[in-house]
Image (tube, rainbow, N blue to C red; front, side, top):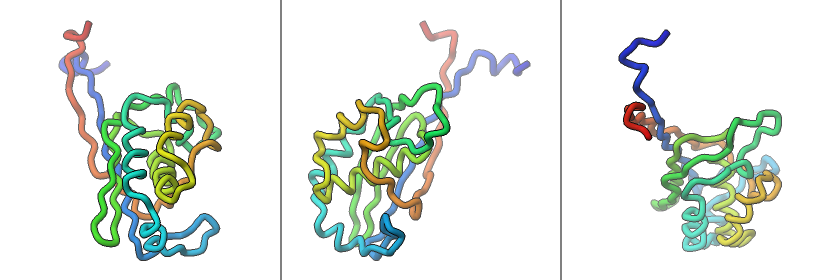
Length: 162
């Protein structure tokens, strides 16, 4: 039985993940190294930012999860922030949510990169979310550079909830 002082407290988590991509090179889909500097120079930053914005909000992220053998009770997550920053050869993707599905951040980042390369338009993100099918979304970005920056817990009193 939980301690009585904890019984009336609800902990909600907010996580911030990031993916750092160095323009010096990352493994490509075929396993060979691809110079991302070539990709970055071709990428359309305004389109990438528009795509990132489309992910913000309360959505079902099944299309961006990559574990077909596991079905979570709910694939709905609330993305609070999805942003990208560029500093010389480094692109930093910052994704903040109330939780993440398996490979969700990598699926989001891979899709945003492909928007920047012209494979998808920012307007297609909403359709990808609605389809709830991983095959409809973009590539999964490599895990190299993925960092969990912060997990914060907000205390909320259950008794005050309606």
